Image 1 (cartoon, rainbow over the protein chains, first blue to last red):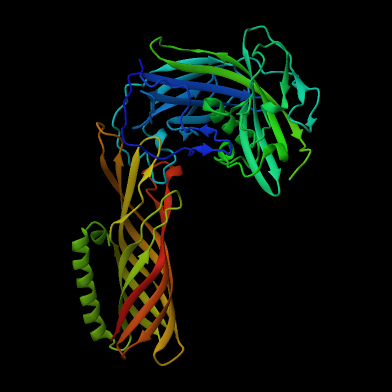
Image 2 (tube, chains in turn brown, orange; image 1 turned 135 degrees about the horizontal axis):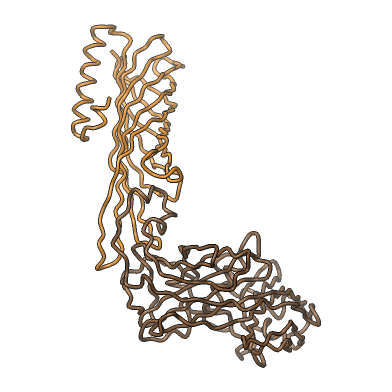
Length: 316
Length: 212
């Protein structure tokens, strides 16, 4: 079904450059785990607690290379009440994001590739409804998928919120569900030392990802020592989770975050800095493309967050 | 006026020359002391108020000034721009580049103040009628149709300028102006209200005046 129309000329350098942190951890500007051959789609939707919109993101690949949509072909995301075109480019090559209004908390989000030559040009400074060339719809038009968002993780709590050692641990608890959804713990970390700021994102390695209502998590899933020759036990935030979290944080923080939030240079060592950890718990549910021929990842999630503090024992 | 607005650029130049010639003849007959013809080239970066990012372009203007008072002239003129290109941009649809070309005429007043025998400052303010052509080139990807499309807007606006004139002789002077030309409501009636826009041509101009 995904027989793609392939632009071979890069349309723009949209995304973040490589990050090489002090411990040589590299974050590519392409979504990881994309197969090197064949067509591949990544579709994600997340609604955060207290936010009346769903952050939606999509990325398309062919033979491992991101594909930019052209000619007025765009992805439309919709609930039964609202719809929106994903016109904004995301953090990754060939990815597109949008905030779909969902004040009524509908669970189903539908995606459809449409051809909208005028609406897709809405950001242009001149009258694009008067001056446009329509090359016709591409082969992807009509492709569709649906996501069912799982329930929001309620009653998110920790037994401690302030820590002074990366060897500390805490218990994260929430109200469990029995639908078989998986749980993900991700974070944004902001460390300050000597007027320098270092920001990054992590995806914690959990004992299990079951929706059982509690998880014991070490602080070393968020704070690390740059000078430690071993890689930290967590994963730096990657992939569509990074893209959607970037959009979510922009929603949650009035002034938003810059594109380099998850890509900043490690000028200070987190273990010796005072850090704010914004922990996000995601309840995630896989979905399926409408066509069995479509290869990719598609899932929906709902999330809630809690803020923790790390006070360095020996701040520099 | 409409005849002018519907002419090709080379015909507009012919019209300008004709009008200036006519003005010279008229001025010679009417009052040999109270006329000034000036020609100026405005160096400007058009600003359409959005994400446009135009290159620097030139607008030629020719003005006929009749001094109703020693310090105040009634001025009328014609202007004609070269084609000025916007920087190429890329969005989810493709890569596009706009080009703009404008012409029209102005009517206004030109007060001035001589602060020495050879030097004076002056202002110029008035209304204008424009005809502006906007062309958009679009490119999508190999294998897809690309091309150009254009349309023309007619409307009005205003012009404001502040200048310094230095007389080389009794008849010939150099003019340097800071000028802005505002064209209002381009494509009003042709497009949705949200897409109607104004465009300004601000910059400095160099010119020569000939008094007779």
